[in-house]
Length: 112
Image (cartoon, rainbow, N blue to C red; front, side):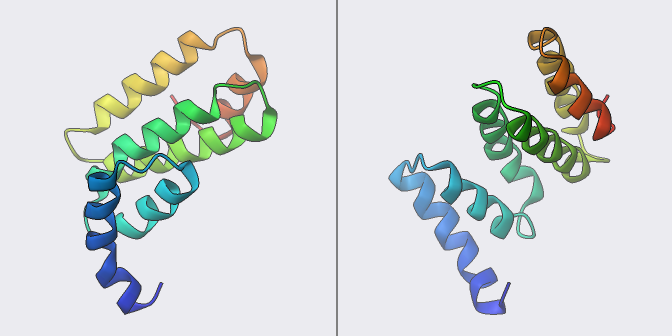
């Protein structure tokens, strides 16, 4: 990402919240751009994107959700948010215990 794009990330982040954007692709790009600015601020966006990925049963979506959760764990590591991320993962495992492929993707991503 260019220095100019990184410089505009806080403005884009603020505008997206102000406008109440709801496009998951836009939020995914914004979260990636804003992570260097404030890694913990993007956790709620990642959470929402994970939850949206799990609405429909689909192996590819499971894989994306597992990768995003692993990224969330890295972002939260060593902070007071780490336990919340792990609790989210545990809750998702329990809620979707009847989706064995999802459990496999979580295991493959080395999620707790």
